[in-house]
Length: 329
Image 1 (tube, rainbow, N blue to C red):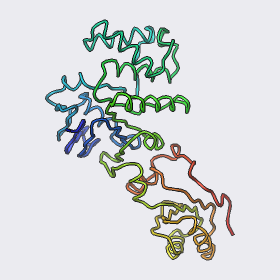
Image 2 (cartoon, rainbow, N blue to C red; image 1 turned 135 degrees about the vertical axis):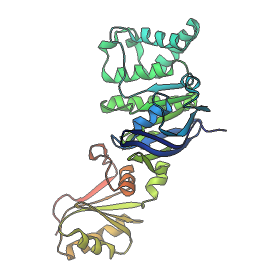
Image 3 (tube, rainbow, N blue to C red; image 1 turned 90 degrees about the vertical axis):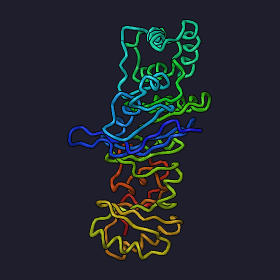
């Protein structure tokens, strides 16, 4: 079976700025593929090229078997797109907008009515479908935008940061809807996000993009396992190289990296090694302000492959065990 989305050496420049710098990609039918990276990494530019809204500077790409440059009309009939900023007429009702969208895709009135019932139930809009859009919350507008992208039953759905700006409850609702689309419809979904937990929760595979290049790719589990089973993270006041040397000498430590005032040590048995790390740091006369044991996250993967955290505000602490939030002695 041919891939639902492919790209080979795909590039896009804006003057001297190379927004997408030669991306090779293959997304299989029925897959949820997460495109993870910070603002400015090239995620939205990549989506716009795949959706035929922006021509590549060089390279090739196909969606649903059609070329993005020479067969744009064929692609547009087969994809659904929900971009970051939903352009919805607030004076119309949700039902009116869905009816208009179906008409633009050439669906018959009977087909529009059937598909409207399907998508309203799928994205959980309920009775609000007959209210004016200007009365909708941000989460409701996101759900309506998703419904509009689904009205023609696309083969491939592009979601560009679909939960940015939503509250946690609305974000969870959108996640559940994305899972339903994939499970019930078998739809291929290309999801761009800067939320670590979103990629971890939804994507079967993840591509990490930074500065226009894919730096790592694999399942979330594969990516996290690649950098060690457990991570011991220490914040230290003092010479970080001295701290790193002390930790490297501890039995069970596989690798040590320094990032600012934070030191991270990978270990196959973090619980067994953390006491040795605490002793080693204390013996080196270093002031330790925190010592934490946790399993790797996608942020750790991003840090490992790019040398920078994706965003501190997007981290989750659900897997953390904080052994010392104060100075250890």
